[in-house]
Image 1: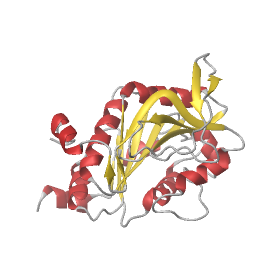
Image 2 (image 1 turned 180 degrees about the horizontal axis):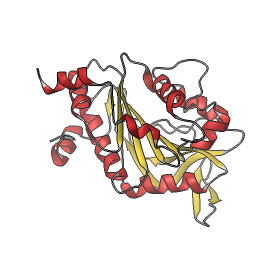
Image 3 (image 1 turned 30 degrees about the vertical axis):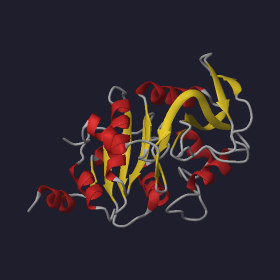
Length: 263
């Protein structure tokens, strides 16, 4: 029997013990479903960003991908900071995260900062760290994201107004661009775990309807928009690699340059 098949049959959750030690942590939630090449690039940036961060963990849910390359990647993937959950069908990120939060997240096991990440974005370690720091030191802000590279996959919408200068509790100044009547784009954003617990019924995506694709991040925005300032931090940048069938980077060339996620 192949190692992949053994892994499939042996456990639906890897590193489950990490789920019990999330209090005060930085916690990243990401779901894998399609495009193994894109996933590898995004995960390389994420793993580089968390490598030197204490108390930082990632939840990876595999939503029963029909793509053999994604399945193979998931069953071979292992990382000491990553909780890997194999879902029996395509729950989507909304349901998958809701089930996890309901089971593991509570007042005594509450992440300090939660990041929602789609596995199709690129970013630097420095910008990831700054996004987390901003979320932790800007109590009057809700959903915070990086500015997106201006390309054919840029998900920003309605960012018309000039940025507002906001002062953090440590005195640092941030220039934040607020989308007008629109959510902060879902590919990557940070939010306080305490706000999710207190205002969102302990859900990352407090949607009344279940979304497999799209709509989920808007449900969080609707919960936070009247109480908090939500927007994109100028000076931080992430690149959205794919939107529909469009790609904004030469994925094959970049993956050849970097090498695979799992050698």
